[in-house]
Image (cartoon, rainbow, N blue to C red; front, top):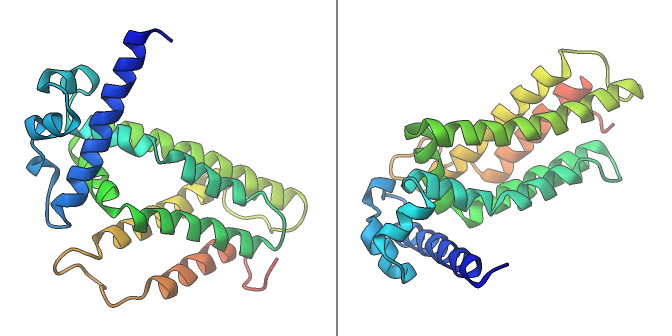
Length: 210
């Protein structure tokens, strides 16, 4: 890698780190529009024009910040193919994802805003989710082929519905810190148990541990 490329990577990384700090410092009441690109660039030690060299807009920068967190989500997906009872694997995978969101709700809150306002970011998000849908659909098909799970809706449709459930659950967690957020008294553990129940019964049609 050339020195110029290395410097470019460092500037881009510095901008993403500055964005992460800006979003965290802004608090749950802030919006992406409140982030000033000039202030962000100064915090990163680069020029304002450098920001727009790497990112089309703030929404694109948030999407790039989310890309850096994708490894955690793939690690969680990998847990579905591990050893032990499937219910335990599903619960472990879901808890891994939820805990990751709880650590960085400021980033995910910005991502919710970015995907609502940017068609490009929304497409990028949907492509990311589609990859996870494929993993879950393959799991469902495998469980059906071995007789562990009964026949049911098309595996891809079922996986899509389950990932939609996850998306809404994670949004609820992100919004929990906002004023007047609905269901603020609903415990995360109780809600997560319900999500695990829905996953296992949707796949296996029963509540006993497969």
